[in-house]
Length: 330
Image (tube, rainbow, N blue to C red; front, top):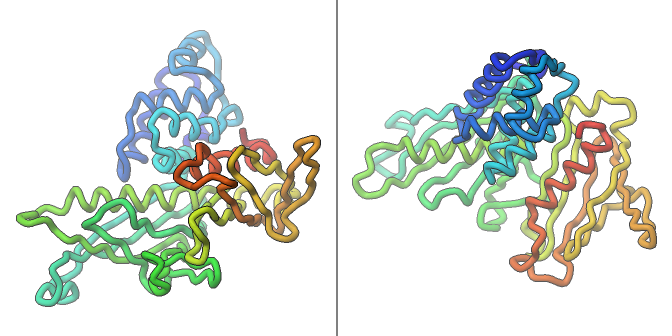
């Protein structure tokens, strides 16, 4: 479903679009139709749902070129308070379907005689609209439930060397994972509560956690991951910006120059070759991609991380917006 390729001419067209995006998103995450409608209106550069309905009734036609996915995603995140869900909806708008299947292992493989938890196989698939595989790296979520854990199959784990992130910083269980040919596999372990016979709620939380982790990392235009490698202290983070397959097709994008977000209490230190222009007097602070990738360290400058008013999620949003503006996607 790539609804961006459809022209919106009427209330019926717009309603169909709302239902399609809501349905594609709600498979994995809760989302309100009213929020989707408001966000789609913003995507078409209208302030409210009522505004675009009035314009459609007056005969205004909205071609695919008038839609801004970034406007849609930012508005949906603002309304819902769930940027991960908004990223999933943003994929749906662009025709990218995230399929997450969970199937319980056989009794023999689960080895119930040795373990008290219940084990499921997790399979994620994400083909592009042209049936070409989506390449993406993400971090297996760990902080969404005390009774559920997710682990990548060995062949999907990524070793980042000195930037590795491991479960509980144990130095062994790598959390970074890669989608290979548009697919990822792993295992889910549920430690049931006394008397718990139904795992549906736990499995729903797994789908939601995986969707929130994968969607931003699989964006076809701009991807930003901010994470803390094991060897970093609590005030330091690593920033990795990369271009998705659609952005890489644009002329000059692989060496794109962009404005590095500047916020009080945050310091951005680009890696060698990543700084294009610096002039503090005129507040110029620009970075440059190399081969479609840009990396830096991010610090809580003089403020304990827990007291920093600029969250990591906000910095991630600002990086994505800055690069998107240079690609003329906003």
